[in-house]
Length: 600
Image (cartoon, rainbow, N blue to C red; front, side, top):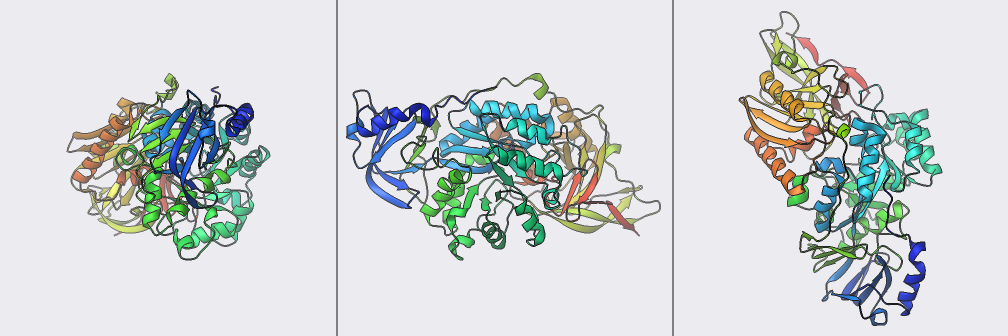
């Protein structure tokens, strides 16, 4: 297993003390900058930072006593010196990239620490897959801390995953060098009802002295929420309104508010700080899910901080939420999150605290990016063949697999339909009257068909239902082996033949996302690793992802980042309606419901 080679504080403490006292030379001095102190929420002009062995030894108005003949001097020229940005909760797989390429994509944006939950690959490859992600993460020049996934399946009995995570798996992972805690506890009904396995996973994490991540995707803030908090989760990122953020902080949790590619939950919750006046140290910024196009074109945590400021938050408070708040929450306040002695030397130089241009990035004392250009290597893990052969579909599919039979003699039916909500993870449980032609229920107008194709055990199973909100027109279909969280294959389309073409294409290439229209493939993003990720550079993957988004628009879809909405349609722990390999799931009650309700 890969070991974290970055030296511990104990290994270098005597040298740091000597550098700070002027008895030994610093490796690097950043001079003449404005020190942004996130502990005191101050900006202090005319300061220097002395760095040794990848850590900060001294911060003060004059570090000349730390200078030696070989000390590297970096001129800040009056720019702000802010801590490297931390993403408090995210999934690398959502970027369609491996940890190495994800790191290469976000380093120029100032992200130097990530707290990542690889539960996507856990659903496909189990503990082996988590270890692969963990090992590549430790190879990177920035800090990627791994949370051991907690819920595979996310809702037992509601879906079938490629592998299941057990309490024993969690206990084993807690001994790994890069594991920082337990990933988001999505089985919130299980915790609220004292499920023995869920509580055993939480107990194993707490015995290891690590942090338990939360995921409470319910509007019920009564006894069920209190029971969930009592069960141990220490944070939550599923809030969508001010009341959610306030409830979490009042109950002793950290409220993580997210701006991902498709989740815009900052503006509706930051008012708990800006208008209600709650203590901002209990709020953390995160992305949750960002695809490669967002990373390459828009940014990462710098984008989240800028957006938070645009929503009325004081820039220094916003920076706290992306640095020291995150570090403190995970027990790493002495390691990362601030520019203070002893910490890892993760520093950004920027000329403006509001627009936040990332002009230089230093990570662990090394310049890793300048003016948007990465200056270091991001090493790749040797992904084995078993990680590249995960689309297990025994046969080619036909249009017949994607037809929904109507009751005999019916001219129309009432169907339960998944309703997509733009820029939010929750869906709506809707009902539509749909026509019947030649004995088959037809998608029409704003309603498309959705299918989930089993891809882990080659059962040949296909579950069909309906979805609204994408606005697709003409004969088209889009298929993806990224299908949170069980990651079977989701196919959405208006025509059964196109749906079969798209599904068979992904079977042939070993995973990814494709879109067909009138028999022609308009876009393809190959994701050969677990059917989730590419080990190609982010810019190349982003270009293909941009082509996919354009193809979706060409088919009539106007939703913001509709691919993310597509990929979450099987996430059976977020209300209201989802599809799984076992049927149509009403997440409000955790019951299966029929696709068709009545006929006329």
